Amino acid sequence: MKSLRITLFSALFLLFFSLQIATFGVLFGILYFPVLWFFEHLDIMFKQGIFFGLTLIFWGLLYLFLKRTYIDPIRILRTEIAHFLAGVQSPRRLNTNIQNQDISYVGNFFHRSLEILKNFKEEFQSGRVLRSEVELASDIQKHVLKKTHPEIASLEIISDTKSATEVGGDSYDIISQWENTYVYIGDVTGHGVASGFVMMMVNALISGFSKMIENSADILVRTNEILKPRVKSNMLMTLLMVRWNERDKKLYMTGSGHEYLLIYKKAQNRVFTVKSWGIALGMTRDISKILKEMSVPFDPGDCLIMYTDGITESRNGNKESDLMFGIERLVQIIADAPIKTAIGIFKHITIELSKFMGYNHRQFDDITLIVIRYKDGVKVSPENRHIAKENITEWNWNN
Image (tube, rainbow, N blue to C red; front, top):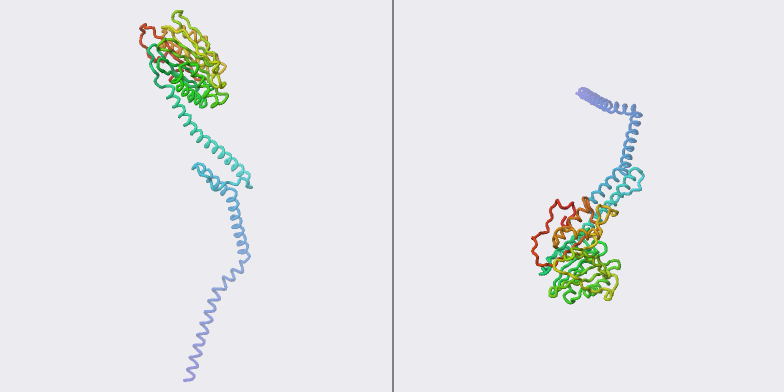
């Protein structure tokens, strides 16, 4: 029995030992060959690892370089442009002092372009505001000048004005006070917003003083007293005023350095020029000793023409060196008018002035014209102000 036990133990021991050897052999075989292969190829793997690592470092550094010199500047520049277009302040600004000269040049160019565009944008916005203010002033002026004028039993009056710019410096008005009717025409130096405001100021002053004062010279003297301290020394206004007394059927005039007063005398069939004399409003504070009201012969059938130098100084072209219309031409046109009524003379002057200025004309100054006819009881064919297009070139009161 004991021998059998020894034999079985020996057999189990041998079996266990054999299994241990086999297990160790398998484990050794599994681990040996990879380790052996690793050690055999260690040199190649080391080189490949170094190469792979250097490659990663190179591409990483290249990306950082491109990001710093190209990607980030372009991204910031794009953001700046987007903020500019949106009208908001950009939180970041591109540093144009970067190492990449090309990007620095492009950045400087775009920054300069954005600054110019910003200036244009600001000027456009302020110009748009100024434009609206100019349009407002123009509307006010048109309302003042185009208002309905009173009808005078003994007189036929037609008038119009056309500014060279949005706001003009020419002025005229027809004011009736009891038996007196005041008709005046004026011209502020230059044209534009400043001249327009001076014109409207004078209109208001004359309208107010005509309610208190009868003499036309005294009205202008008082107007000048208020105007002079309130305008610049270079803002002057020439003016010519006539006063018609409906009761006495008398005409009076006061000149303040303006153009000639033109009178067509029916009896002589001739046009006379009357110098206005006087001194421009705004030139000196006290003009009471300079301005005088004088009587002017004015008979039934006669026509009186008042104008600004925009007519006599108009040119037959769009250059300042071109030929001017002139006072002599204006006098001759009045004399040649086929119909000697206020509308007839007004239309004839308009047609001839338009023909003289021609096509592609340029209006250099404000133009104002007033024609007054003393009705003589003779029936005339009714007329209107409309002028057929074939009788003019381009310039007209309404274009």
